[in-house]
Length: 403
Image 1 (tube, rainbow, N blue to C red):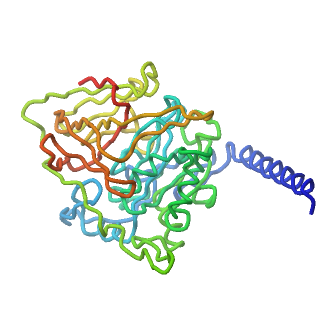
Image 2: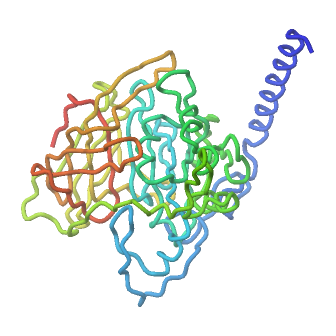
Image 3: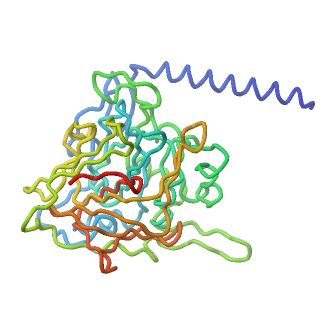
């Protein structure tokens, strides 16, 4: 076959697939959409019991003690919940944060959330799910694309199930899809919507009642759908065995070699010295400005974005975190025509840790890509965190943080 014929066939293929996508996207508008086992005629979610927006999975007796610590958030759960999560690996889910994406689904059920800029002042989240979503299938949305520094942070959790819709693929240091391939994730823990599709992922144009959304803000999945497809691929708590040269690697529980962050007491400080926290990722980009207000009754910080309460669509409640960490890191970018950013993810740097109503000057440490991210106090000792959601925002070193 001649080179010219190959080019013609390639063009025809791209045109046909693009047309098919456009037709299917148009056809889905206003149609019934299956999200979490419940559906309505206009694509919105039916009301279900609990805060996750989905089907109840476990029945927990009120008398069952909560004495099993979560490896990610340090909270105590029942043995019933532990038995469920022990068969799985954590989910690391890329979630959008543009104004059209808010309110997102599932943020309040995360164990850890990483926040940084995806491009040109626009922030994005990587939410880690493990312990807090075992009782109920939890709707997660809207899912967006991969970025390289999130992959670096996720790497510290020993091959978590990385969930995304495509990713940056511009040749160079921001090529997230290329890195996923280079690291071997594609065959053992990468849950890319491009290779999975319906019904694990669906586009719900009516996910936010009363607001029609553009296609890029509509990708929906759920915790159980993701774990189901992972199980079918053999991606359980055990990493797949594979041969590298003459050596067999893998076949280990993901927790082998993983050390949970130390935890302290969930107890308000005697004197509140950090009742409010505020900062901008880029000066003047108030659409993504973060603010946290301390709530003494729950010993938590309430999240605001663009000066508005940041809600979870699953339960219509404001997102709250036990630990708010501002991680200062070298920032580069935009580095290409797609306005991609880069952050230093290894080595050490300064951090501010807010918990129990107080601010603590700390250091972050990450020896290499696969090492865990840790935090130490002024004396170099591991810093105990309050059990519960930890929210980590990465900003440039000179970012002004008011508290």
